[in-house]
Length: 244
Image (tube, rainbow, N blue to C red; front, top):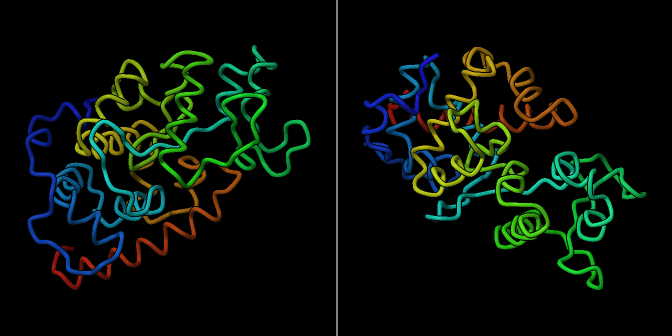
């Protein structure tokens, strides 16, 4: 299967939308930043750009791109499965997640960290500086590749361990590409969806099926509802601007 990231036309296509939207919303801001490439890749995949805008908006909102520091969310429960289970004492001294040692909630909830065992536990989701501190702590405990495999990377929030689905040999290679430009994040989304047979449910607006695979079954209904709402907004904005 050919990769979107290897398509030379897409690699050169303008990232920004040719016709900018004036609405002050996250969906409009995302379109203005990457609508050109979304439309081009959408024509190849037969995926309307509104679907991609909706997913991106739900995954990271209007967080801006910072060169060298792509948006990320570090996942302690994934780090436990990939490293902490073999080093339980060291993991438990620095990270918590729901369902372990009486922490309330599902495994994707109750995420806490502390740099030293003597410090108080701190939440870190919702703050990119804190997310990067969590990633740095995991890197010190294990190594950079393992830590990056345990983080959702870029605007589409693709887990690092899915790097091969996006055409990268390692999570580190994907992290570095995502650090350079949002172009590679956009193309990675299309490659990931193609590898997981997700383009079809996106084309059909089957948000429940999409979210079950993309976000996991545990919280699929909530994600599906949010994606549907963002998709409706994207369709309205693009239609009003004649971009559908």
